[in-house]
Length: 230
Image (cartoon, rainbow, N blue to C red; front, side, top):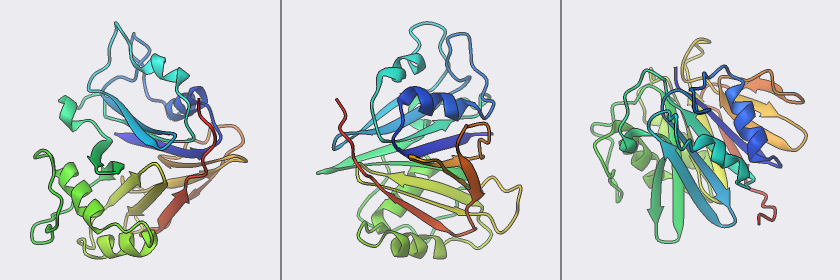
């Protein structure tokens, strides 16, 4: 099952990657997760991304991420059995004039037929990118909770879905799982002294972090508090 892990606050990339893998994600011979993965992270006023659509045994990329400095990041770990092209690796990225956004999701892709209309169109045929454009076209940073609520209110009531949207200024996450405890759309909030985590599933092995489930249709907003990165 795919998993994602997002964090904001004071942490090192070494901690971030180690904590995300405590969920039991198997590593390949090159020290990378088995299967595809993607990382989006903030550096200053920029949003950067590193992706791999397969595990590697030579020229491993994952271990080279330890030197990165950031205070907000999200990592998506694809199912090891999923066959991926580079364009299918999450998180998806959209760069526009003055803005860059990253987006990832788990659960069901809703049927957007009849709903999708706006000024943005996906770069490819992947339905996850279409969902990304649907969310981004309706997202208003000045009113993040209201605008995300407006998005999910138009989806089919039976949709089990979670997603996370991130820029260099803000992280927004929401889950809808119809109160089904085993739903793939569930998200969990981890609270540490200097960090907040959004994860699917909760990673209870992380020292000093307590976990609570997000409620169905709950919108979580984290405004970035920048620290110097060199």
